[in-house]
Image (cartoon, rainbow, N blue to C red; front, top):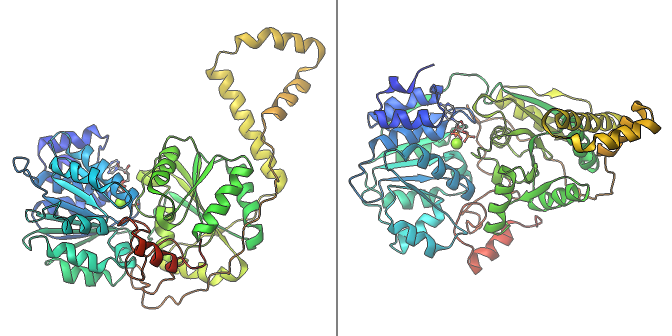
Length: 495
Ligand SMILES: Nc1ncnc2c1ncn2[C@@H]1O[C@H](COP(=O)(O)OP(=O)(O)OP(=O)(O)O)[C@@H](O)[C@H]1O
Ligand SMILES: [Mg+2]
C-alpha cells in the first residue's frame, strides 16, 4: 500500500487527506492520482467503496489555481443525492487549500443556486440537466473549465444523458482534462471515451470479481407473495444496524416501506417521484439512524456512501449485473464488512446465474429462517439491550423495586418477564404487496468485462432524458409540466 506522500502531492493536500483519516492510498488512488497529476485523461474502474471520489478529487484539487475566481472543474453525477455527497467530499479535501465545490441539481431552487454560483466556487458538481439549465440561462460560465469528471459514467449513459453530456462538453474548452470513473465499465463506455477524451489511460484494479470480498453474498428462493414476511424475518434474525432494501418499482418501494412501518420498523422509502425535500429528509434520517431501514429504487444504488450500512436486501432481483454490483456496494465500504441478500422467485434462477456469471462471484443459497429463529433473534436483541444497560447506564434508581420484586418472585421468573417485555416479538400485522411478474434472464452475450444493456427496461427508477423521463426522475431538471407528463408515460404501471 502506498502513502499519499509517495504520489507527488503538495503538503497542503497530504495534510488534508490525513485530516480526513486516510492513512494509506487505495489501489485506485495510487493508480490514478500520479497519472492525473501529469495532466492525462484517465478512465478509472475500481470496486464500490474503494475511494474513487478522492481518486479524481485529490489531483483535481491539487491542480486548481485558487488565485482565479471562476469555475475550473465540472463533475457530473447521475443523481442529486450523489452530487451533494461528492461535493461534500471535495469540500473536505479542498478546505485547507481554499477550494470550494458547489452541488447543483434539479429539485432545488434555481435562484438559490444562482446566488451560490455568484460566490465563485472553483468546482461545480452537477446533474447534467440542471447544469444545462444554468448554461442556457447563462448563470454559469464554463469557458475557463479545465477539468471534467464523469462519475458513474456508465449510469449516465444508461439514463440517456449522452446528448446532455455532449452539449455540456461543447461549452467547455477542448484543452481540458477529462476523468471518467465507475465500478462498472460496460464495453460501450468506449464510445464515451472515444468521443470525449483524449488518449485516456485506463486504470483498473486487478481483482477478478466485480464486487469486494468484504461483502458476503447470499440468495433466498422465495415466492413473490412471501417476500414481505421473509424480509421481516430476516430483519428480525439479522438485526441490521442500517439496511437498504431495494425494490424494482416506485410502487413497490411505497408498499414495502409502508408495510414495514405498519409492523413497527423504523423505515422510509426513497424514489424519484418524491419531492426533493422528502428525498433529502429520508437520507438525513437514515444517516442519523433515526430510521434504520431505507427502502429504495435504483435511485439509491449508485455511489451513496453511508457509513454503518451493514445489510443490503434485494427484495427484487435487479435488472442487470451492473445494478446488482452497485446496489450491494452500498455496504462493505472502505474495508468494512457487509451482508447482501437477494430474493429470487423460482423463475428468476436463470437471471441470478447471469448476474453470477458477469460478476464472477457466486451467491450462496440460504434457507429461510423459521419463525422460531426470528423470535430467537429478537430475544437476542433484548438480551444485548439489557447487557448494555447493565454496563453503560445508571440503574441504581431501580434497585429497591428490584429487591422488592425478588421478595415475591424467583430471579429467573422475573428476568424472563422482563425479557418478554423487552423483546419485540415478530409482528404479523397483515401487509399486502402487489405482485409483479418475475424478471426474465437476459442473455449474457456481448457484455464484455462489465456487461452492457442498452435497452434496459425502464420501468424501474432509472432512465434520464431519452425515453422521455424529462430528467426529473433521478438527477435532474425540475419537472416542468411537459416533463411531468412524459415522466408519467415512462413510469407506466409503476406508480
Ligand atoms: N485512502 C482512504 N483511506 C480510508 N478511507 C478512504 C480512503 N479513500 C476514500 N475513503 C473513504 O471510503 C469511502 C468510500 O469512498 P467513495 O465513496 O469514494 O467510494 P467509490 O469507490 O466512489 O464507491 P462507489 O463505486 O460506490 O461510488 C468514503 O467514506 C471515503 O471517505
Ligand atoms: Mg463513487
